[in-house]
Amino acid sequence: MKKALVSLAAAAAIPILTMQPSAAEPVPGEATGIWSVGECGGDGLAMLIDTSVALIFETREGQASVAMAGAEWVAGFVVATVKGEGAEFVLPPLDALSRCSALPGGFSLVFAESVAVLGEYDALEARCMGGEPAAAECVALATELVDVSGDGVFSKAELSRAVRAASFFIGYGSIARSSQSSFVPLKDLFGASIAASLLGPFLAGNLIDSYDFDGDGQLSLKELFQDRLPQQGVDGVAAGLAMTLPPKMMAGLMSTMTGLLGGLR
Picture 1 (cartoon, rainbow, N blue to C red):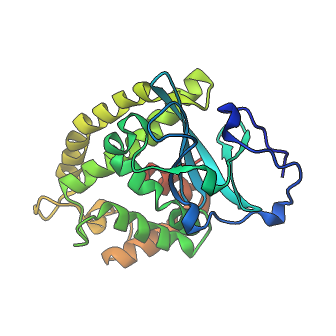
Picture 2: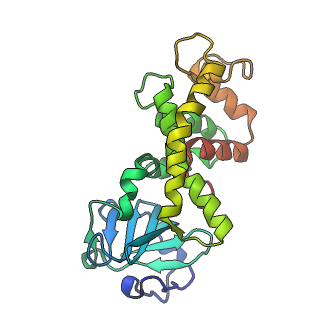
């Protein structure tokens, strides 16, 4: 592992000069959550840390920017590697951080669905980044994420929620590419949330109108893949899709469906 690059929020990181790749582990449960260097809600550095991914927030004069990162646990420290830059930030020990109830700028409220999907990243990576037969499990997990009610079909509200969940990841990727900066101002992302809230019901309604063959006002996987795959039922559709699409294409499809960090790793 490279030497840690310590440049964000000055006192917010501790350099570790020698780390062996084999020392890296998933972030343990006690280190996950929302943390801040200094007082919660103030200027400086805040992080939403999961077992393998993180969102890093830098706030200056009340204006926050966010970057997506991978997260690892190395020698008792959280190491966050910023997407697109490869810059590593070694965070202070947990007892030097403040555990917070909310992220800066109302992020948790505006992008609540995206935060929920972020928490499923490990499961998605395990099931969706491999080849067959994991692809069928990938379809099943993506279905579970969208199907909030657990009734096996997608309602207009559930599909709209999926669009809202994708809004942060799509908006972040677009702005980061155009600005060539991994840190994106939150104010620039709120437009993506508003657009998703407005377009979500329209897109969901259009999808249901196009594939709701039994007229129940909801969408099933069987209906979605009608005339495309021979298998019947959700299990059959998942298995058929796994056999039909190459593993890399399957991973890309699932990342798009869930709006989740397709290029983080």
